[in-house]
Amino acid sequence: MYWTYENWVHKYARVHWAECSHCNDGEGSHDAVESRAGKWLGPFDQFGQALDASTFETKPCGHCSPTGDEIVERPEEPAVGPYGAENIDAAISYAIDHCSAAEITYSDLFASAGLQSPRWYFENGLRSVITHFMEAFHHACARQGLPPFDAFVVNAKGSERAGYPGTGYFSINGLSDPLGDRTSDANVRAAFSFRDAELQQIRTWCRDQR
Ligand SMILES: [Zn+2]
Image (tube, rainbow, N blue to C red):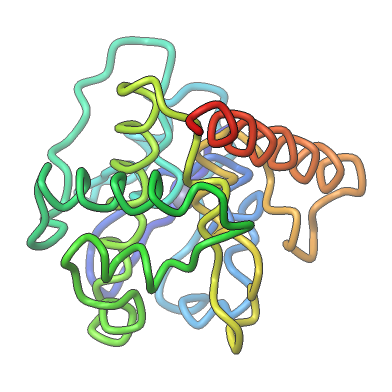
């Protein structure tokens, strides 16, 4: 199921999966500061319907990256900042070198990649860079036959998600955010057991490297 958020102030629209943390089945994010700046259209069964729902320029949400079964030309990705394959490779090398750790932080991963800190991107309104970089990292691990290293990248102490991956880790794997207020118990269990299995894959792979 899809929803489209129409922003009247900035005159754009974004299509989300209903499960996206920014969408919450058309309720919006918990800190819904945008509530008077636009409205939710939907729900829609078809991705194409959601794309066509608004007369404003409409793109898929960069966070949940909705897609449809029908062939829909995917709009251009937003500009995401200064990183390339070499940054992703550096982050992968770091993850390989630290695969025996129980976890690594986003901050350490970004530093190893030669990027600004996640906090810096966040504070400069470039949160999408974090999401996109981690998506690229996720896909690069899979492409290179490596374990899903994004499973053991966590938020540092002091974050409200300390010790856990960001919402993007769960959504890219088609899971609900287990830390979300509205996530059902069954979905919380499903998300945590999926992650536990991925952490086990990392441990097994790492042990086999010795
Ligand atoms: Zn979304």
